[in-house]
Length: 364
Image (cartoon, rainbow, N blue to C red; front, side):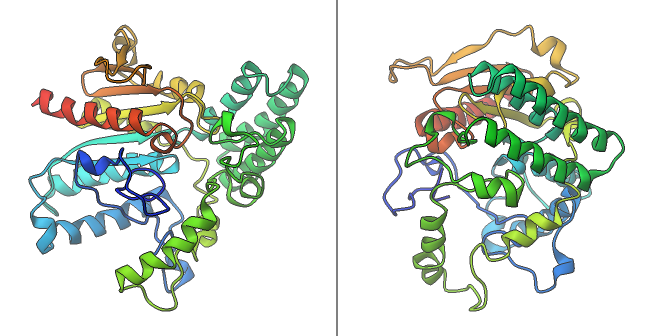
């Protein structure tokens, strides 16, 4: 919201690239325990993506049956997420389609947008090595050592030892950070700047679900002015207060892929599935994203489609990015942006959203 696409930024100034200019926005703190959401018993934290999806479906049932929600039942509904949220969304979308077909809720669900999605952890991690070499962040000797560490992760994945794969991933990440002299994982060009992300401690403690450099400012805002504005937050609840428990609960699920579910959405539903990748993103870089996209059933025909520059209008001097679309699948390459595309290149992010919304109208 405040960091990327909402009407106000962290300083509560107007954002001229807010996605609210194109659509109504509903922000949900998920998994439970993140943001203002909370549990009253530790056994209620989600330990799988399926549990996260079940909670979201429960929420959506309540929302779309509420006085306000009923007004949106026939309004095209999209789920747009980022990073680990991309993996979550694939499963949420699958469950939502089923719930709608079983008439458990009324909702005009038309599409998902997966931003820098951590949807295939194995492929994503392996891509760090090639990305780092090609951007002069590591040499061949360091790449070899990282590759050896990666194969340990791969071994745990092949034997379904998911928690061991997670902890091995942390070791891999720590080594990667050391070799790159702690490159900014969210935006390679913000490395060492005042706007760079605070990655070092987060890499060790949170398995690369990295917070931004604005974490302190955001925490202060959400537990101060916004809390007072909402007037409904229980006194004993602190925004972000249960985040660590959320991460710990998901250790055994973190490294599991959701590519098969994403493929199902593309090949077996009418949803418009969009994926976007930031040019400067290290943590979920373009190389890894392209690799798992190449496993989709539609890839053979999709790969033969030409990429289009956008925007085609001349209002922006520089190219925002490129897009390739085949039937109900689109992929966007966003220039001059890292992991958090709307924050790094708000104009490009907004143009992308416009194209996604327009594409749904055309498909009608």
